[in-house]
Image (cartoon, rainbow, N blue to C red; front, side):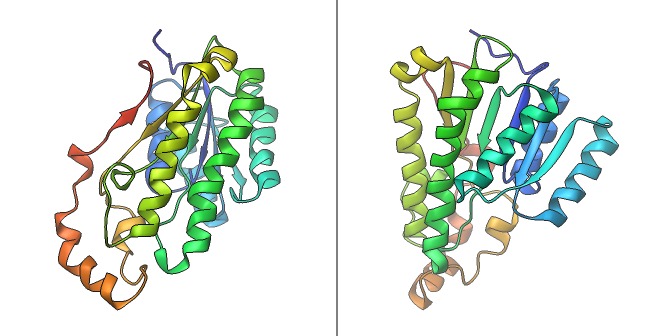
Length: 233
């Protein structure tokens, strides 16, 4: 079954900048009815709304300040989405950070945040409010979710976790009861602050040295996007 974007509603965590905002714009170009940008950064959120309104017109997007590590905060973004658009068909769990120096926060956002999104989307909001037969949850992992990187071991662990839960939640047992596809995307290195501001975001001098020696060797976005799914979107 082909999943049609036209007329659908999406919620994107970390959607106010970087790849998250790009996802929102590309979906709108493909006929998306509306999108919620769930992000912790108010300044980015307001700027993103202005950009979307300028390109796509009014009432195509809302911004909801959201801390994905807080289940109630994340659920508020789901509730606001339903209030604004009446439906929810697509969830993109995109919020994430790359900073092994603050690994507790990294784990909380990259793993707990995705768990919160999947549980809210899969077990409640998408089955109840999807506008057609199927819904979709896309968890953003990384090339570091399918290949280990010694320079960022904890970040790598979080992205392997995202892959593992995507495979488990994407099992046909869950699809058969919810009619929600769960899949993962694994982007390679992209020109966003996640990478351009990577210096110092590691476990110390030995890791910084490894970073400086190996950063240019990391696979690029162009040849490393990979999806894991049971059937085509």
